[in-house]
Length: 69
Image 1: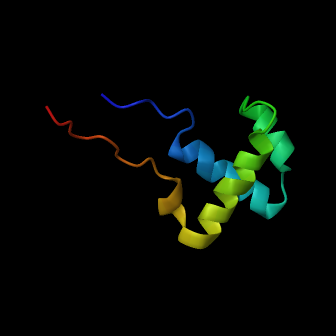
Image 2: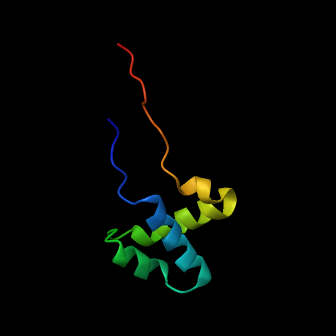
């Protein structure tokens, strides 16, 4: 069983769109999402990933789908 993502794809996408449009600052968005003291850096990171790779970059990735015995 995988770890549950702290932020859904929809939350990440909305945060990035609000940040890039200038509607909200990274600090405001991080505060709304209760991200802690360095949350604004994570918003900027998501924004850069979105610019480089589009929406796919914000989707959760499958990890450790199988284990060795």
